[in-house]
Amino acid sequence: MNNFIKRTLSGIGFVAIMLAALLTNKFVFGIVMLLSLVVMMREFLHMTCGSEYRYSQILSIFAGVTLFVLTYLFKGFNFPGRLVILAFIPVFVVMINSLYVKDKSRFDKFANLYTAILYIAVPWSVFNFAVFNGNGDFNGKLLLAFFAIVWGSDVGAYLFGITLGQKYGKKLFPSISPKKSWIGFWGGMLMAIAVAMILHYAGLMPFTLLHCVFLAVLLDVAGVYGDLIESQWKRHYDVKDSGSIIPGHGGLLDRFDSALIAIPIGIIYLVALDSMCL
Image 1 (spheres, rainbow, N blue to C red):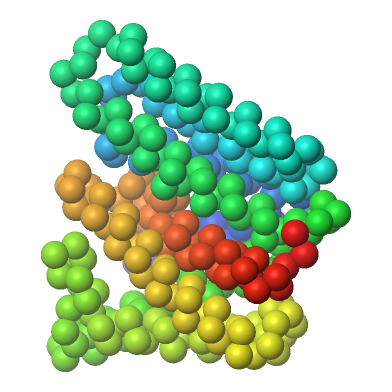
Image 2: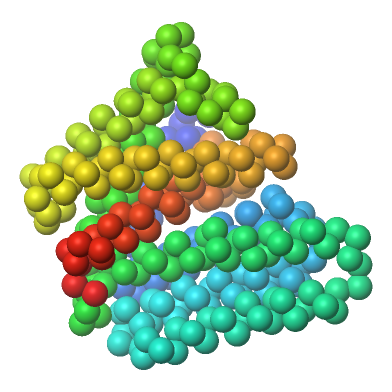
């Protein structure tokens, strides 16, 4: 019971912070998302590098922060887009710094410094394209809708998987996540479609119903891959959770693993269809 209460309260707190970030203004959004980025990169680097190359880990996080901030300024404050290329400078610093590391006995871990940027900072920076229009006006409702679909898919997959999948369903990806089943996958997709339809009729997804359903399917599939990708990292390093910042739930990376892949895919889809005013 105590664990249930702890999970419930921390979950409510997490949702409240996300709602504040997406429904208030661009300054709150920027602060919350920036702090979340730092925490996720720190969790990933702690999982993969441990206490080794700490200075290099700081440089990697700084590179990710630079990319997000420059993209945020470009989309939200009409910062010259060409200057986003400055984000490459700290990445080059990370590379050059590797030459001066004295202990190279575990030099293979340096690859994780670049992976953290590509895996977390790059997709997290793409989120800016979902909340700002071409004039720099902020509206987080679309990003909130995307999160709702992704998390709805997670809930549906869990409910169907735990009730039916463990007994009757074939495993989805047993070598990486033994508990995931195909029944859970299809249950997650049904829930994602249902959430997208509700959001469409509530006016939070200003696209045709067909596009909303297709987006739900796209986000669901991409989200499953995102979940499996993080599961693969955790299995390789024999880690149950990426962190413990959310009591009873684990780390931020555990909460956003699906979204890191799914939401950028959804944004790319809308950009390709010219459905967003960029």
